Amino acid sequence: MKILFLGAGSAATIYGLTPLATAARNAGHQVVVAAPRNVLPDIAALGLTPFSVTSTPIPHFRTKDRAGNAVTVPDNVVEGRLFTGRWFGRLAAASMEPLLGLAEDWRPDLVVGGTLTYAAPLLAHRLGVPYVRQAWDGKDFDGIDPGAAEELRPELAELGLDRLPDPALFVDISPPSLRPDNALPAQMMRWTPVNQQREVEPWMYTRGERRRVVVTGGSRGLNFDFVKDMVEKVSDLGVEVVVAAPEELAAKLRDQVDGIRAGWIPLDVVTPTSDLVVHHSGGVTSLTALHFGVPQLSVTESQDNASHIASLERLADFGAGLSLKPHELTAERIGAACRELLDDPSYTRRSQLLAQEMAALPLPSEVVGVLEQLTA
Image 1 (cartoon, rainbow, N blue to C red):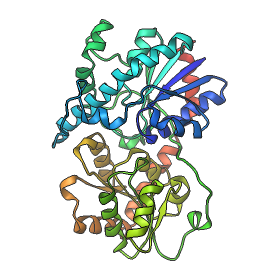
Image 2 (cartoon, rainbow, N blue to C red):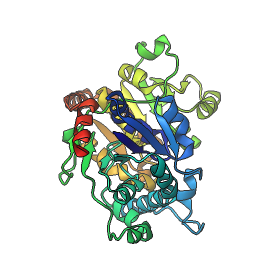
Image 3 (cartoon, one colour):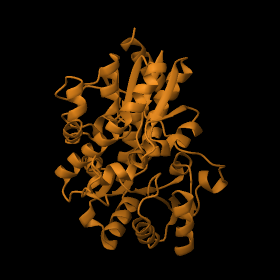
Image 4 (cartoon, rainbow, N blue to C red):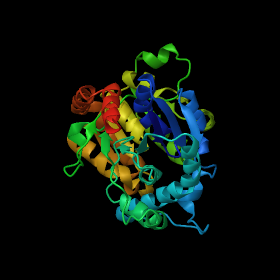
C-alpha cells in the first residue's frame, strides 16, 4: 500500500506524524511525507521520504492573503481560530498543484493528514481514496475548520463540494481524560515522543542537586525576547534551568543569561530527569511532558495560538499543570506559577495519571492494521 502523509510548516507537525508513518513503513508499506520545503531536512533526518509542497516561506501564508495583501492577527480567541484556519487554508491551496503532480506518478492508496493540513481531504476526494485525519498534538480544531473552508471555497467549488470532506477515520493521541466532551469518535493511539537527536551527555539523563526546569520556545525558535524573558523569570527560582532551543537562539541566550544550559537538547532524554516543563503552548512539548508525567506551565504569547488554549485549560483543570494567557504574562505570575507547580506534589501525581492513560492506548503498529482495513 502507498500512504501519503501530509505535515505542515514546522518540525513539530512532522514529529507528530512520524510514529504512525514509521510504523506503516516498518509494516512494509511505501510511505511519503509531504510538507513545505523548510521541514524536508527534518523528515529526512527521521528516516522518512520527503516531498516538497511549496517553497514559499510559512510566514507568508500567515501574514498575507492570496493577493499578497497584509493581514492582521486578531486579538481575540474566536477570531484567532478562524484566522488560523484561513492561513492553513492558504497553505493548502498552494500545496495542491505539487501534490497532484506527485499523484500522477505515485498514486497513494491512502492520504493521512495532520490536524490542520487541509490539502489532505481535498486531494483524497479528488483521487477517490480514503482520507485519515491524525491529531499531531492535543490542540483542538473547533472553530478553525470554518476558517479553512471559507478560504478554500474556490477549491471546494471546483470539486462540487460545499464543505470540507469528513475523514474516513480520525486518529487521536490525547489522553482520554483531556478529550473535550464534544470530541469526535476516534481511533485512539499511543503518542510516542519524537524529536531531533544529538549526542547525549551524562547530565541530560541524570538528576543534579537542584530541581530541574526545562524551558522551550519550540522547534522554530520563537520570539527571542519572549523566550529570554521566560528563562530569566524561571532562573530567579534558584533551580537548574535547561533551555531546549535551536542553536542560533541558544547561543544568544548563553551570551545574555548566566548559569543556564541551552542548546538543541532532546526533550525525550531530558524531560524524564526534570521537575517542570515551561513552554510556549507547543503541542509536542506538552505531550512530551504528559508522556513522562512531568507537570507543565504553558504560556501563550499570541491569540494566533488560540487553538491550543482550550486543551491546555483542560490540562490545568485536571490538575496536571497551569496555563497563562497573553495578558497574564508578568514576572510575578510566571514566577508564582512555577513555584506552585514545583512545591505542590499533586501536580506531579495528576501528570503521572495522564501518563498512565497514554501508555495504555493502542500502539501505532496496531493502528496501521486499522489503516489497512480502510483500503482492503
